[in-house]
Image (cartoon, rainbow, N blue to C red; front, side):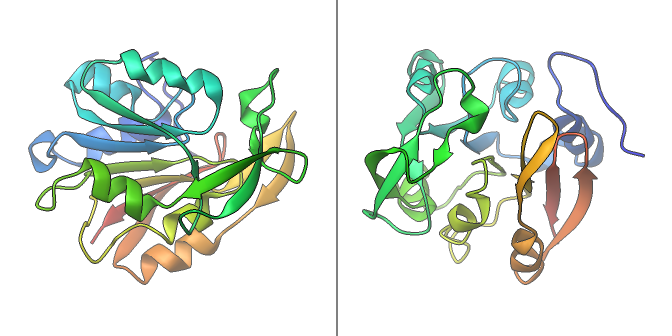
Length: 201
């Protein structure tokens, strides 16, 4: 049974992480991909507000640009996929951001890879310790572009199902095999919010 934390400053995942890894092990840098708006509800919120971490927030939806006004945080307005400069179509749902995703009905956009984003914002000697990826079905395609040969984050939080009104729209377990092969291990499956937590070996 996975515990559910009700503090507005904690998601289940962040509370589990902070209870499991001493704060001194972290550099205090995050990468939040699919961050939505910069308030309660995204994975980096408790690290930013309670621990004063700095980092990079990435999202394709227009109202996520509120991140530009967050102190100590860079914002990248981008559609993240496995490759750079690929023509894609991104549908932004004006009524429900959780249904914004790559879709044939979307508007033309050009993609960006995580390798490009990480290389742009993080110094070579120090990458993010905490990475969250929540892209409504696009998590695996983003993850494969992360530059593991250069950076080894301590923690990944990755959404594994896209849901709407209680129905599962898509599910993808490929991230488990992908990260196990890179010496990460699965430590938490939050079935309520459909997120995996991985720690580095």
